[in-house]
Image (cartoon, rainbow over all chains, first blue to last red; front, side, top):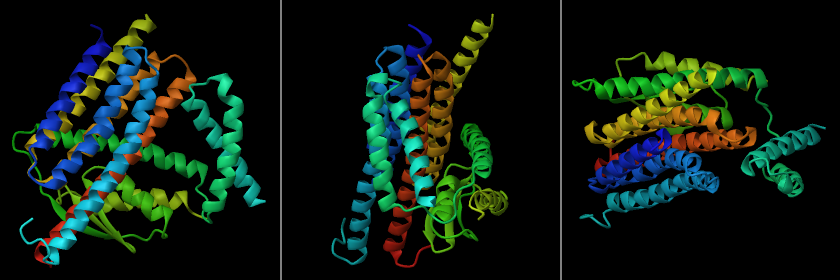
Length: 95
Length: 156
Length: 103
């Protein structure tokens, strides 16, 4: 077990802990933080793994993950805003 | 002339990105050159050279300031979280920026989210609404300093 | 000798990076509302990512790979700032939508 493996394990555990926390909610906005979590912790994990496993392709995965994190947030925010607007217009008073 | 200069600068930047993305694989260089030239030309069509060109020296100065302060931001958050009392005084603050519309304002809003104690929430015209972790801190002065560095970047 | 020094420095950077990621996750549990959680996630995690990137740099194969890692770091930084702003704005809009007046 090298240092890099240890670092990767710690990051994975932190990522899982964060996911558990986000999964429990309660607000939808808390779930939006998941994409942020993957955008930073996930990228760090992949970069470390690329080095420790000797798999340069994982760096490409990290890059794509960082880019997707923004898109996921944009999609989520757009959806939440639409729901919020519908709420204030009284279309879904119980959501 | 400015057009050709921008095309050259953008092609060079894209070539550096290509070189990094392919991890220096010489076999991909020819394809990368073609792609860089093509993308630079297409980008000029969609994003013509903008009037206030960022200045290199001031950009590096801002980058240095930003790196240093974002480290302070991380340490500051860690200090607050690890303290058992959890010292926070969250609240909103509205800052009126003197920066020009477009890139300078956008850069300030985004940079502030990574600087100590501030998170930009909305940007309407020149009114920047910030969420602050601790409203007893001199947030206004901090924002003004970041604004000063960005203003120097785009000084014509 | 300088090799050992570099390894120690690298280990230090990687471990400190992990600590800041841990603080970010701790923030998710300890902080009272979503906005303050965003503060913790963006700031602590970005410092963590920066430290881990710095720790990885001496180990990579060549300058091009180092440049790639730095590029990914820049993208992640911009992504994190943008995402933080977007979520913050959505939250503000929801607050306004809830009571119609805002705080």
